Image 1 (cartoon, rainbow, N blue to C red):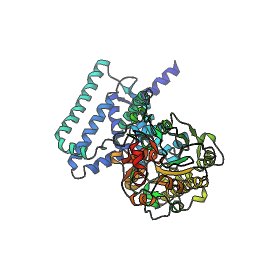
Image 2: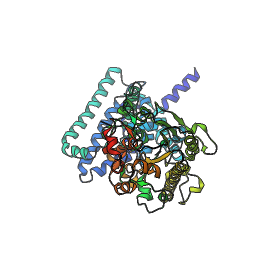
Image 3: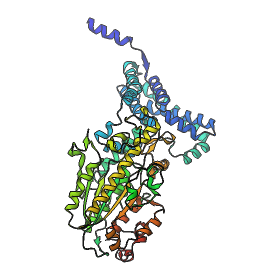
Image 4: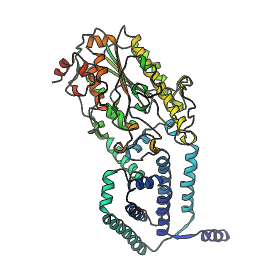
Length: 554
C-alpha cells in the first residue's frame, strides 16, 4: 500500500496541463523550432509585402493548431504529439542542412536507398540534433500529466477550438487572397518545407501509391522491333551505356569547366553534348524515365511501370541486354532482362562497408566482351558522385583536388573542400568512362563498338544554401538538372554505319535531354520499330542510313 501511495505522490508532482494547451504548446514548438527553412523561404517570397507575410504566419499557425488539436483525445494525444515532434525534427534536419524538400519522390528515394547509402546521412551532428529537438521534447510530452475533460465536454471544446482556428485561416486567406494567390502561383513550392505535415503526408502518399504500383503489369512496347543492319557489318554491334550518378555538367571540363576534370576523355574523340537536361533530380525518377519512351513532360512513375522500356524493345529485336549495377538498383527497368547487383559480391578489391568503387564495373567488362556473340547492349550503373560521402567514391590516386572533404557531414568541411571532393569523383568517372572506351577498342577485332555516358541528375554544392539533389523539378536549380552527356563511336562502326563524326560535333551544341536517350540508343543499334522517333535521335542527322532506318519504322 505504501508503494502505491508513493507512486501516486510522484504522479501528482508531475505538472498537469490541459490537452488543448499541450497541443498549443506543441504547435508553437513545431512552428518556431523545426521550420526555420519554411519561414525563411516564405519571408523571401513575401519580401515586398510584410503585412501579407504576417497574415500568412497567422493563417499557417491557425491551421496547424487545428490539425494538431484534432488528435487531442485520451490515449491518443501523447503518441501523436511525440510522432509529430520526431517527424518534424528529422525533416527539419535535412531541410535546414541540405535544403532538400521531403516530398513523395524524396520518400521514394529514401525507401530504395541501401543501408550503406543511408548510413552516410546518419552523422553525429544529426544524432545530436535529433536528441535535442526531437527526443528531449518528446520526453517532456511523455512526462507531463494531461487533464482530459469528460468526453462530451471535450468533444465540444475541441470542436470549438478547431472551428475557431479554421475560421481564422479562412478569414486571413480571403482577406488577403490576391497577395496569397499571386505568391502561390509564382512559388508553388511555398508549402513544401512545412514540418511535419509535408513529410508525413508525403510518406502516406508514397505508401498508398506503392501498394497500387505493386499490381501494375507492364504493357508491351515495340514488339515489332527488329535489327536492320543498314551498315552491313560482319561483326556484332555493341553499345556500352554508362548510366552516371549525380554528375553535374557544371563540373565537366568537356563543357568548359576551368578545372581539368576530364583529362582522359578529352583524348578519346568523344562527342559531348553541353546543353543536356535530366528527366528528374533523383535516381528513382530519372533512371526509369530515361529508359522509358515517354518525354519528361509526360512521364509519371506509374506510366514507367505500366509500359515496357528501351531494354525490352532491344530484347524484342533480339539484342542481348545485360545490366551491371553498382548503385541502388534499376528501379524496375531490368524487370525482364538480366541484372547483377555487384555490391552483393563484397569483393574486397573494390568494396567496403556495403559500397564499391566503380572499378568493380570495369572488372566485369572484358569478360562480358569476350562472350559477346551478337548485337549487344551492356548498361553499367555507377555509384558515381553520390553524396554526401564524396570522398568514398574515388581511390587515393584520384585525390587530385585537395584539401578534400573527408567527412559525411558537410558542417565539418569548407565549401572549397566539398567542391574538391566532388570534383575528384568527376575525375574518377572520367577514368571509368575512358577505360570503357579503351576496352571496346581493345576488342575491335570482334565487335563494332560504341559508348554512351549520361548522368541521371546533377548535384547542388551549396549554391543558395542547397546541397545534394532531389529538389522538386519545378523549382530545382540548374545544378541538379544540367547533366553531362557524351558519345563515342568506333571508327569501323562510324565508317560502316555512315556516322559523320564531324557533323555530330557541329550539332552537339543543340539542346538535348533525357528525352533523346531512348531513340538515340535504338538508332545507334540500328533497331527499327514504330516506337522509334528519328527526330529525337541525336545521331539521326549525321547518319547516312537514317532515311532507310526511318522508312522501316513505318
